[in-house]
Image (tube, rainbow, N blue to C red; front, side, top):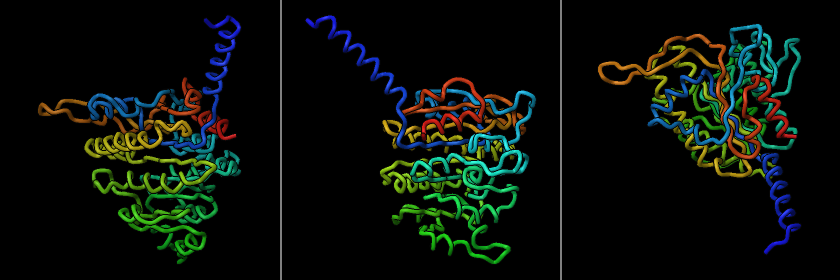
Length: 349
């Protein structure tokens, strides 16, 4: 029979190890940011997935406040900047504070910690949402300037659309040559993402925005696999951002079929990512929304369920955060969207 001092020592060890486990920092971080995704979208996605969303597999849940206390409206650009940079920018700015000074985005913070970085998007790489994670521009509509700034970002991997902003520019420049000189392996087509190996990857696989999920070209799944296989090789760890834009676009278009295909694609993608990193004790997976667009619900139409978009405006409502892995406990509760940046920063340093 164990003596009392030994039992006390064992109990103290258990408490210490439990505390240590709760405060461990991840080696790798995967941040998935979904534009336009609110609680009604989550409910619809779960119903379409047989009543159980793959997001429910993540162990910790929280909510982001997307609006200021004095403002009942939400500016989508400012909302994505709040996550990417921890600040609410002025109207039209990227990577800038309200005084138009440059601020560090979270991928730049990760670079300071010698981590390799990657960015995947279901839009052009020059579109506002992904650009908030690498660009410092006064005007988010200047797509060619944003394309030029990616060479200064030191991203190890970026995959999306937007080739025309690199090789069919108004200034006659061909930035693909500069990308190759900088050591990037350039990919022009979705199927070719499956082939070849490189330390630095520039995937510009559409002239402008990627096709909707309904095209069934498996773009998102192939882009994730390419980025993951490239970044995981680094001994210092990686930080990857995946920005999903087209749920928002489907709501803006008031197109229920478009939205349903994007929600289905989201479920399939989260299932894929979870298989790769969900049980990895070194990797923190965070999935959050940047803001909510409109409200949706299932209705019956001709005795069949039909997804109806009830409004197209951006709502000043709480949006969900899901987290899994080392440090996930930091992302529970209700907090401002700028605090997500600070929580991630605390895990990088």
